[in-house]
Length: 449
Image 1 (cartoon, rainbow, N blue to C red):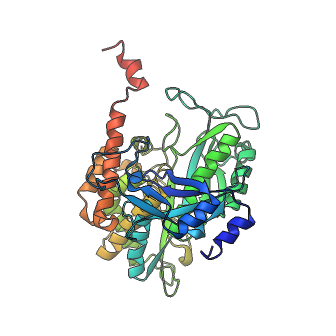
Image 2: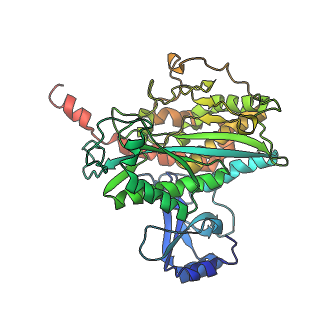
């Protein structure tokens, strides 16, 4: 939407309130809710202000105070609404709008710790080379029965059939239709927000669904995934259940991923640079894969950002465990699907559904970018199962953060101040996690040691 007619857009729809959304380190929506008249005034005079410390918030909602990445004076930043993201919020009874905002200091410099800025930074590197990346996310999630006790394991919800799914029904049509009322709300609400969805399928876990997005601009797709997660949660609540994007919500069921299909086109011609005229993979595609192989281990904190994330990445679970690649092979991290020249791409199967979409897309593209500029050669493609090879991806968040800390090229692409702030947030989350006594410890250690 053009910035000169958004006031008319708000008035014509009789908007009462506007939600100014900022994705934080975890991809959680932060920001402000204010009357439409104050939004109009505030967006014109840098009046939409919040402290930069919102980027030091952990996933638990705690501030990280012991960090050098932030100014000791707790300075303000102002929100600059991206009016192209202005949408009507479809689940409220009162007319309400939402808009995603970029963050700037009062001297008009961008806030380096903002995940949306980090993605823009990576896209700028591509643009300087005359390249334009294209992505298409595939996002899985579980519907679960309302769970008010965090010590109690999650259960599948009851659908239209009146029964819980005992097991997953991969690609089951009737199993997916069991949740038609919520799915219809998701589609309707996404259409109202111009979220460009493609196909829906039932995945391998009980009440596990996958939604595919049409390919397009990485920033646009990151915005859509950010809004989609919020939409699905609201639709689930309407139907007396929860939707979760946890990477591994059930102990004995498959995890939820956010597979990223990515390719690169020439800015001038629009030609896919990953395939030659005969439809064969180009050296640039192989270098892109080489970069993913070299750097994704260090970029794992952005693709698997939580302690729970690493429970998904285990053998024989439709999730990768190493950095091998292959053609049309779903056991590897980097799959090159069979396609024509225009659609030649690589699918990064590592990111989890719990990842911040801005950072996961930025990380995947950053690894590929470094591979292209450094002309890195990939290993030979894997034939057969990649699970027969060693588990080389980080086994836990602490290992992943350590790899990131010692990988200078990746830190330079992301911005060292951002990486420091992100690491401080994640290290504090791990400190909090270590204080928790689990049900496993109570069950097996209480009376046996």
